[in-house]
Amino acid sequence: MTNEAPPKKRKWIKTLVFILFNIAIIGWTAYREYASEAEVANLADVRLDFRFLLPAAACFIFAVFCEICIYVMLMKRTIGWASWNIARRTVLIGRYYDNITPAAIGGQPFQIYQMSRSGIPAAQSAVIPIAGFMSIQIGFILVALSVFLFFGLPVDIGVGNITCYIGLSFYAFFPTAIIVSMFFPKAITRAGSLLVKLAHKLRIVKNADSKIIALEETVIEYARSLRGLLSTPHIIIGGILLALGYQIALNSVPYFVLTAFGGDIPYSECFSTIVMINAAIAFIPTPGNAGIAEGSFYLVFSSLTEGLVFWAMLVWRFFSFYLFIILGLIIHFENNLIDRKKNNLPKDIPTEGGTK
Image 1 (cartoon, rainbow, N blue to C red):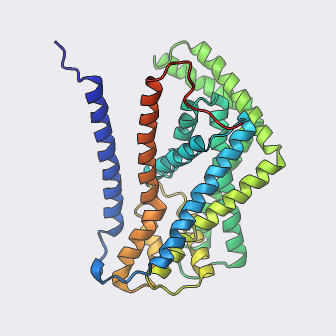
Image 2 (image 1 turned 135 degrees about the vertical axis):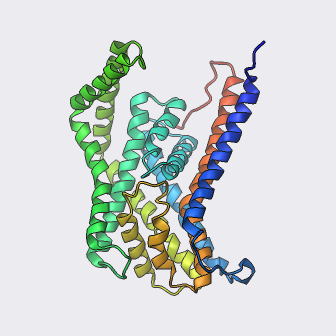
Image 3 (image 1 turned 180 degrees about the horizontal axis):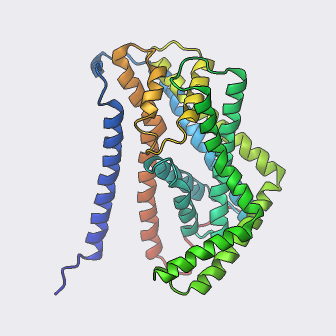
């Protein structure tokens, strides 16, 4: 007699643990951000102009749409077809893990896995998320440089120019490293081979030689695909324009939230301040910059009546943080449904596909 739980029961246990994990993340960040708020207006007394929450929501939706368009464009260029559903799931799963892992380092590996499980070849599954990541990073760099050049530091945000420039350098580091790896694939292959051999000695990996051969083929194909993307002008221009749309839209959300709660701050001042704060806190190693973001952004929201600051920041964090976690959780459930459907279909019937 065995004590092992039936497969369905184990599945439900895993799902319950996963839900509780997400609730814990949201609860922890909310506590860190708002537990110290001294004075909070009663919700019944809050006068909110919902007309300005509509453009805030529209900015969020537009930002996500821009990023999905980047992935659709990259899919068409690298594999010859595109699926909006695969792109949507890949983007949202990446944003989910970006917001629950320290310094937003968890998104790309899960995006690669998401594309791979959708039937996209290994090299292209790696190239597309990385190219998408580069586009978003470059978009922010361009926006931030424009703000630095034309606005400077419009208000005292509690950080100096040096901190902003360090954060901007942090943004630039990863795209630069990726481009370097594209031109020196052999160095990447050698480093990867050493890791495989080490894992083999630790008895983590079997058949090290075959894994190294597969790694070499994947890296070569990855470098070739990435060079192909960067040699296509309309891909570069299109990706940068969409990334600019993403960054402008997402960094505009605080202005509409502030205005909805009765704040009176010029759009240019609010936008430039938000961009600079985002640059300054880019290297903070906490999930969603929790513990630091609220302190920095408080300087922006403090223009409101003191009792309204809590509610305004809560709404802002909903759009910039919690909503990505909620949507990512939905994608996890959607993936489970797809897996169930796939398991119930004959093996010769495809379950993922795209438009040629």
